[in-house]
Image 1 (cartoon, rainbow, N blue to C red):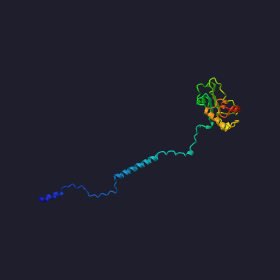
Image 2 (cartoon, helix red, strand yellow):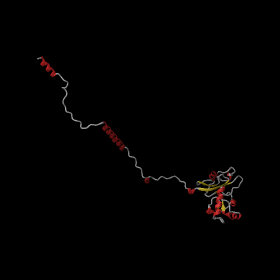
Image 3 (cartoon, one colour):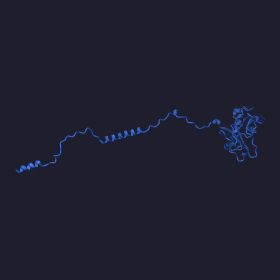
Image 4 (cartoon, rainbow, N blue to C red):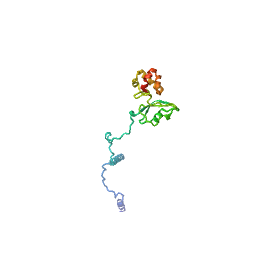
Length: 216
């Protein structure tokens, strides 16, 4: 009898399995791996970034060059308006000087650099220069010759004329014209008309014929 009771007690003792239910859970349709999650995050960031860019105000479109308004250009130097003057006499750098339009005698002197013995008081340093003008710088006590030399109107300038101009003089051919230019370049320019006799091929007789046809 007692054995039967003990057997029944064993069968009715709690086992801890009484609360578990035999429930069939459904199988997951898909799973997300770590790599797939990272790719999805990057895609989300790209989409958000593109949306932010699209929300910005569009930049104004650049106009074609032809459609741009014209801008007034500043004044440009015109080489044809430059002044070319001849500076001779008591200066360190005798010869031709190119100056800007409106230049004055003082500008030409600054370029030629007068020597210590130059008499600058004999010159009007404020005088405006003209293209082709001859400026003779005298020494102290020396009379300043006129700018145009001793020649009359239309005289050929010994210090600026080219070969073609010099050959218009009576008795002057291309060889003599070239000799005049060579002498001018070697000495820095003529300071007196009678210096023509220092040119090869010009003697006293030819000089007398040319005296009134030339200027400095």
